[in-house]
Figure 1: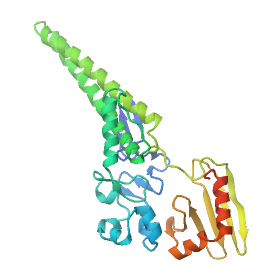
Figure 2 (figure 1 turned 135 degrees about the horizontal axis):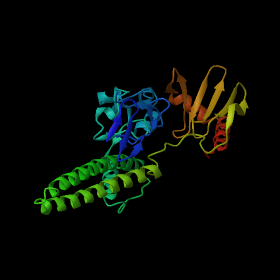
Figure 3 (figure 1 turned 45 degrees about the vertical axis):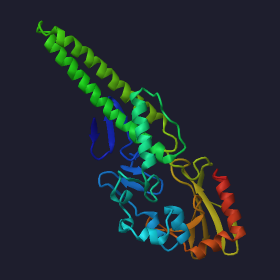
Figure 4 (figure 1 turned 180 degrees about the vertical axis):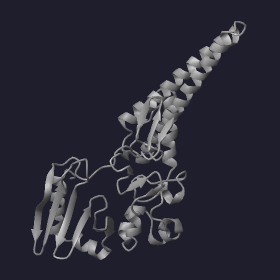
Length: 306
């Protein structure tokens, strides 16, 4: 197994993958792993942006949606305030599947186990699941299987070589021949395990390999397109690179520009690349404005989200 420092790639038994321990894909253009809400730098073991949860502490509804916890629960663990750390510094017990907040990793480890066991049986017993944590675990297990297969193949070749040496002495043929046979079997199994892992990794594990991107199924829209307006406000959409870059639906008035988070039905603004969700009262005011929300939903429908 060879790891190229700085690129986050793993090479095993002739196969190459951009997926690493956390099961997320490397964006080669910027050298970071994409998690949906933010990017992760494997070299430092930290996210490049702060946790969106830390920016939603003043919005109890948004905090609950992102973390599944109340404010007092979040603040009860000081590690939650380390907003750049991966899974509060404990990636064995916890996982961060989308860059928002840590979750318990039991389902992920079930996926890891299923992938490794089924790859060792050349695909037999592989489980399909709609659980994104389980699927992420399968991705991690496939990468581990490739590494295991590479080590097995190398061991098998070494065993074969030892058997040939012993056999060449004549008197060692009885020992050398079985060693050669064992080496061939080990090599074959290793190649098979690595191949099974590479195959499953290439075809994808449910939702694990690809985070949904707003507008990925919508049309290409260059620049901002206004799709609704009222007195002193308008709603625009953008989608310059469907599937390559997230589309946008945003509300603007004379003072503010708020983006709409479709998954949590919340508005936020962006300053210096950081999301800051609006307060509960501001969010409710916009959500209760029928004309604004009709425009927002129209934009989401154009982008293929409704």
